[in-house]
Length: 163
View 1: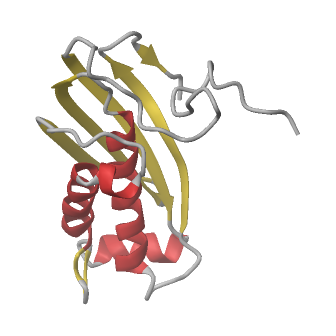
View 2 (view 1 turned 180 degrees about the vertical axis):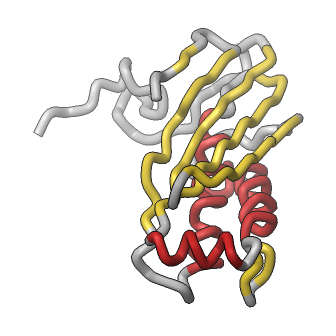
């Protein structure tokens, strides 16, 4: 097995032990990240959801998933051990149906010394998990897939990933 190169991994110290990255000397900039997740429903479940106006006995499916995604983004540092706690200035979540799939987009912004990619990914993931939880009584064949970073800007590099 190859030993990790601490010089390439910012979350490792010189002895390859995990550490929280020191961002104290970095300049604060505006940072934005956009992540996306897809939840694929069996056709009959997607049909049931549409016919029910996305309201099931557990509640308003899309509304609850939206709120859960925002809450997830806000507590990312409590879930991912080496993430910095950030004062988010914005967390926008949209959930749109694309055929039998729900596409969740989460865009997070802050002014700070570290990026918000993990917050955007967490927000999209928690919204997807909430959709699963809200709908699992209809089927356990629901699939959460394609959780990915779409773009980020601010800091050292701006990136946009093709879909």
